[in-house]
Length: 101
Image (tube, rainbow, N blue to C red; front, side, top):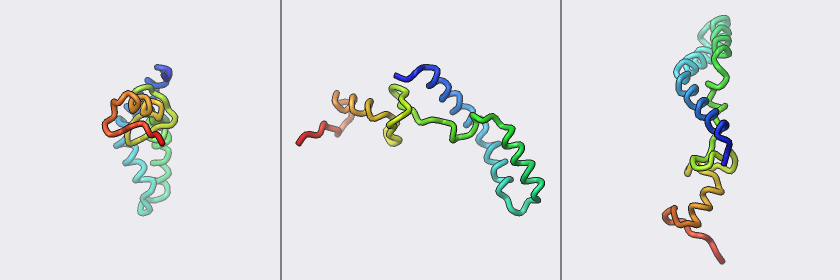
């Protein structure tokens, strides 16, 4: 089980990303617009840098929904390999059986 503080910190980051997404996208578009003068694009870059760091989507970490584990994460199932194996062994995931040969 991951530390509660780590999981909460990640949740705060998710909220910040959602809050600043529109503003960040607009500034990003202005920085990449080749039709604008160089000074305007530079100002947009500076404003983008003033936004909170944790509002960047790349700072959000994928974590297991069950345990909060950050590593060995399956995106499709939104859980870690350990949780997946545990639930599959208990027969909680339909169609998934333990392999044997």
